[in-house]
Amino acid sequence: SLYNRTGDEFIGFGNYRAMFADDAFTTALFNNALWVLVVPALSTFLGLLVAQLTDRMKWGNIAKSLIFMPMAISFVGASLIWKFVYANNGDIGLINAIRFFFGADEALDVLQLSFWNNFFLMFILVWIQTGFAMVILSAALRGIPEETVEAAIIDGANPFQVFFRIKVPQIMGTIVVVWTTITILVL
Image 1 (cartoon, rainbow, N blue to C red):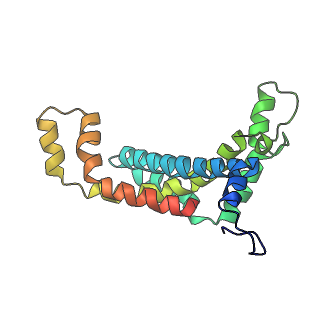
Image 2 (tube, rainbow, N blue to C red):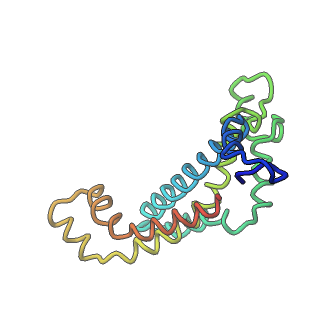
């Protein structure tokens, strides 16, 4: 509002100046921007990578099922799983158990590490959303006409060129939809 709380004094954009001067607001804005950039990008990238790598494998469907499994559990279930991974007890927490194995003396609460705690929490959502991205992108990759891939191979394209210059442009619409869907979830 351009007026104070009682509505009798014009303050212009003073509330906005105060808001952007507040350290807590700028930290929250930075954290939100970080989540909106990192989680959709990483989930989409990993989903596309898994979809491509498991597409022609004999046991690819089993791998895809395992990658999709976190999507089938609730957020409560995922939080309980990761609570045990991140626990600051060496007998329970996986991270501290590994640290103790390599000679650490005391437990570390990774969710209390400034800045890095954001990434530990983002990893949980990436873990859940990668399966979603993989399923959608795998279907898109299977929808690419074999003729275009074969023509590129005959023309001398290596596997990286086939993937980045033939397949990715043909499924770019699907990549944007997956990215947008995960971004909406993050928001």
